[in-house]
Length: 487
Image (cartoon, rainbow, N blue to C red; front, side, top):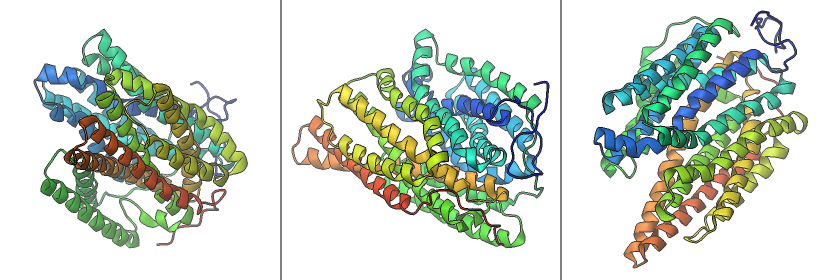
């Protein structure tokens, strides 16, 4: 970019940023949306490669599944630290660090000679990915005035919804062309190019707040969030005792982390500032988003299981069937964002949450002969209902915070989303397995037993959705004027 122009800011001291003068959306936000799309795509891109990896490295399916588990685990460990990190180093340095880390992990994974090295590459990728969403949200909230945030947040939703939906389909096409290494080889030049461009053209947004990291907090966050997510991800794959110990240890360390942050808030240097939860609308949005992600991510794993294990579809076919739902959710993002700017949150979130519960209840009636057309329609409608929830809730919740807490609020929300997704997935899988086993022991045929478990799991997801409905009633129409956080 050859010129610099002032953009609209929420305060007069906000810095200048290079972008197109005619654009209503700041260049920084657009560029970060593209970069975030690239890194989020990699969360789901390895799903279809598992059979190839099992053959190439002579490993069991459970071992190969660690490629997804380790990515989620690393995200849960790193995200709680990003609030401090973003305020410490600034926008440009945070972007360069995150994207070069992601690029290095991609390169390592592309040439990995062993499965263990491939796992290391995924860890490095995830460490970079964990920084990008809080960085994007913090930058957006700093640069975009409140009256236009819904529209811009809708553009973000488009990228963040489409990326995971496209991941399995993209990997399926690349696997048709050759080795699983093509997945990383295709991403590598794109990631490197946007990293170089961003490092040159992005400038710092907001003020840096220098301060050393509290390493006790770092250790507690890593052990707590990491242990809890790991324990939840091992439900059904490990012994009950092992799973219980991991979950209990993680929960205990998170409790100690919270107490440590409360103590550090009085001293002026928390790693994750929990004064965010004193802001009512943000606290309500945390509950709503966490419950929504429990139902959303938990139910999203059920449909592919049903399509592959009961209906005999390949992973690519199952991915293609659910892809329209993700694309619909992304395409509706800008529309919902524009409606939020005009109508506020409640007229969108309350009907959307009621529709979500109804659609999950409808999915609880699927059987072995449910038509693919009906499944596709229900899934697209479910994703559309979620589009009316997530964009307004995030916008109104984060808009309730003062600028000094943006990075901490987005980090806390990101961390809880990881935990909520793991909780929802583990809970619904336990319900599915328990009900299926109960029916099998009572003499039901195997297919009928699994269908019965699946129906109960979808019904449980609908039950989680009722929490979203209740929380939606507590949302304000628009973000309340932020008050200065008290020590």
